Image (cartoon, rainbow, N blue to C red; front, side, top):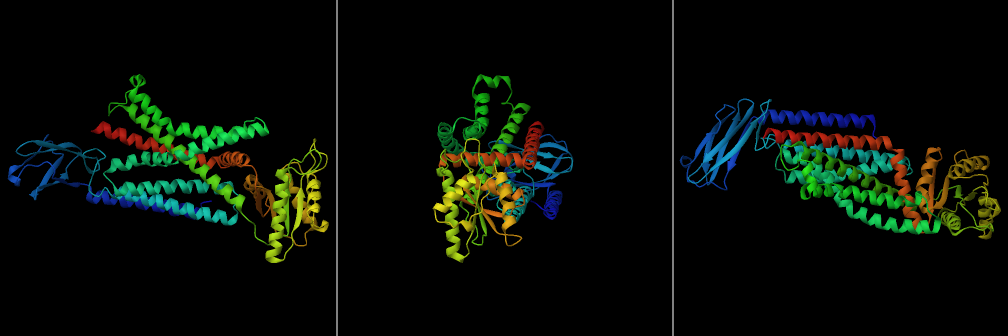
Length: 495
């Protein structure tokens, strides 16, 4: 979570950069030095004719010089308007267009074209993105230090990935900078590059999740939850290529006759540009959240708790008709036993096992009792088993087990771990965190088609849980896309 102090620091940086940029433009932006080399056929300044095309007192030419084949002309703004500087040598004439803004800013080539000191604009924007990146990194580290089991961690890591891509792209834009219009268009290119870079990931994820979802449906039954992988992968792929499909339809098929995207001063093309930029931005951001979900879910699944635990919960699930454990549940029990053995070997401290799970309508005994029986078969002493046999879901697993532990614990704040299937660790940990239970999870391996679909469910849960944060970011990106597309359209109207 970004602190109030960090928000104020970011706002201060933004205002400082804005004031610095305005001051730099105000000092140097009223003049422009034009240099021409590639086409001039002359030996001296006397061979060139330099004049103002319209003669409307918008600009004035000062100190023209010609040396080593390079013509240098200094231009100064006088009043608002536009003007052409015409340079004629022995063979041809060239026209250079200048615009004077209401504030006296003098731009070359486009209304939002080059001007003296214009490099400060992309530089300031890059600093602002980097500042946002460092603040996000600090917020992520701070949140992870509290607990890895938070949906906010996913949202923050996804934003961190997005800002990293934006910072890298802005750095490249700065290195190949060619005017303010490039800075404006860099927003679209940043979104597009991030989403296109992740497109192969989206296609691969779509293919893998589709196959795993079909396997899951065949073995576990058809449901919309089991189709989440297919739906998500296809949506990301379709949204990523949607702008390209739209471009093709408008520019290369009769559909383009319905709208005017070919004329530079027509609004249709800029509406299309806004649409593409917004789509690319949303897709890039959602893909970053998906990758962050997978990273943190895998991190949680592979995490091994500290060897200081007093209790380890074994979260129950369906048992067989004869009361024995299914492979899924046996994996959870075996992982708990393995952790108990590792802790005892490392520190000498023994852990108490808390098998947890009630009896379903189609089960012969409570799941907790079935796990208890399995633990005894594996050599775990009865005095190191504390069974909870009333819970019907993960929430009750945690709540009832905590109450049972409090009744028997020798300390007020015992150290607790839990064992579940790898794809279930992250969600269980988040649930425990929301209940105020300080715990760490350890994951047992299972079929991959279970894990992939479960990661998708975690991603959907992240979007839903942190929907306000995601909506704010997406709305901000959409407004920025609209603003920059409007600037490009305004520029086209002025030239």
